[in-house]
Amino acid sequence: MAFLIRTIDHTAAGREIVRERMVESGSLTIGRAAENDIHLPDLAVEQHHVRIVPAPDGGLRIEAVGTLGFGLDGRSVDAANIDPREGGELALGSSILAITQGDDGVVGITIRQLETGEGEGDVLRSFALASTLPGKRALSWAFVGAILAAFLAVPIVTHLTRERIDPDAARAGQVALDSSWSTGRLSLAHHGLEDNCEACHVDAFVSVRGSTCLTCHQDLGEHTTAPRLADGRAPLGIGDAVQWSVAGLFGKEGPGACTTCHTEHEGPTRMEPASQKFCADCHAALDTRLTDTALGNASDFGKAHPQFRPAIFTRLQQTAPVRISLGDKPREVNGLKFPHDLHLDPQGGAARMAIRLGGGGYGSPLACKDCHTPNPDGIGFAPIDMEEDCESCHSLVYDKVGSTFRTLRHGDVRQAQADLIAMDRAPRRPVVTGRTRPGQFARGGRYYSNFGPPVSSFVGVNRALEPGGVCSECHLPTTRNGLADVMPVNLPDRFLIHGGFSHAAHRQEKCSSCHKAETSETSTDLLLPDLKSCRECHLGEDAVKAEVPSSCAMCHSYHVPGGSAAQGHPVMRRGSVPTVNRMGK
Image 1 (cartoon, helix red, strand yellow):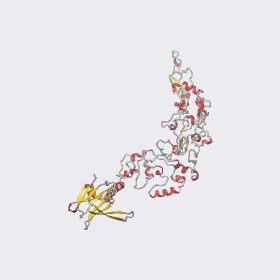
Image 2 (cartoon, one colour; image 1 turned 90 degrees about the vertical axis):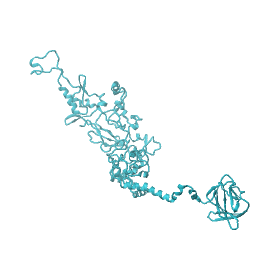
Image 3 (cartoon, one colour; image 1 turned 180 degrees about the vertical axis):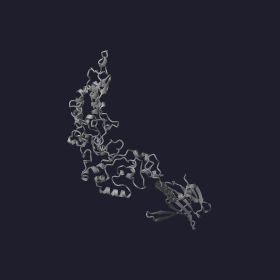
Image 4 (cartoon, helix red, strand yellow; image 1 turned 90 degrees about the horizontal axis):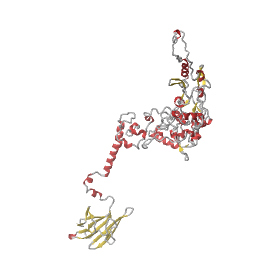
């Protein structure tokens, strides 16, 4: 029997190459082995896969030789009879063998490679559900429409038709399906607005505005006035100017807006403080743009930072403190006389008295903690209180009635004088003889006279407020309106009014590490650490060898005047410095 084998191949350019050969044989074998009449180099084809032999009535018998079947006209079979005059298509691996018979009786077998995607429709037609679905293109457009409707149209429509109210963390958002637009979770400070996007994003496709932030943060202080802030801001570089011009096209506010520093959707963490560069951009050369500024230039705490300028009183009867650089070695005049070295001397009289007063909370030589009590927040200390901190040693007792001691009222000079004078006018104790006086000499009679022993105060009224008197041990005597008095006491609650300092963060240090109180002989000594002392541990944000790399935000807050600092940040108030003025009434 004659078989015409025709092989069709394609070049890389797509040109078709046809090769023909005649095979005279009683049967035809097909497989991967080279000895087959038709060699198919395909791993999906067995070594000896199919044999074709003549069948009765001029047909052909196709049988699988191995364990695998073959495809015939879209069906998978192991054996089948075909009429070559009608033709048939045999599928083996990636090859298609088309069987035909011409008028000359020669059986022709055309071999070609299966094209990509060819026959997939036949496979789908065998599944009822797949055969009823639309095509891929139709499904793709349907999905695109559904996505646009759900995640674009619905959020936009509900956003435009919502009720406009102020941000409220307790109220659910009105915009539907807007969470799909979120670029990340909110910070811990704003986590309550997680499902209320419109609280901040008031207008669609417009950046968050500063006015929106102020609906909740209305008590936040400004860094300075807007015109002065603009004058002091460093000029933008070329790259920054281009970026801001592009951002302006999308409704983003310019430099100085809230969103310039405070970025959201970066995860449920605390908002990071501004970097050192943010402050240095303006403050590195601030005096070149604001020539009237009293602030020194600063760009790095370890390299370029002015000396500290505490607010102190430098003369008596001064109404307001002045800021003086520690480099000028200023002397503080607060109206008190208090030598720290005398009180902290472990061998001195104050130490011996404290040891004897063990039952009064002492029992050992005086230490800083005996007088300076930390505030609950650990940032600063409570004001010194005469009754609580001093009176254990410096008693103000002036009389005793039975088992009760009478004490002068500290802080009110006129009341103290009145108490002492009233004590001298009190009735004297009568002389008890066991007999009453007769007639007009009895109590209430015309000739009655109190012959009891005279009583005088422990502290003379006139001498208490004089130099050398009991009050002058701590206070400076003076005369006011012709009456003896003492100078007002002015003790600032805060010395560094533009910076924050937390003592709790430095509890591992000794007081003497920063405050040289043990060698201070007079109250005019300003016991504050200078810039060099702080630089022993703190250097700039990018310092490699610093024990504590410190950015500007560690001590300074941007929103200070009249407003509240960030949570956990040292409380800082600018402007007037609160003072303890107990004697200036």
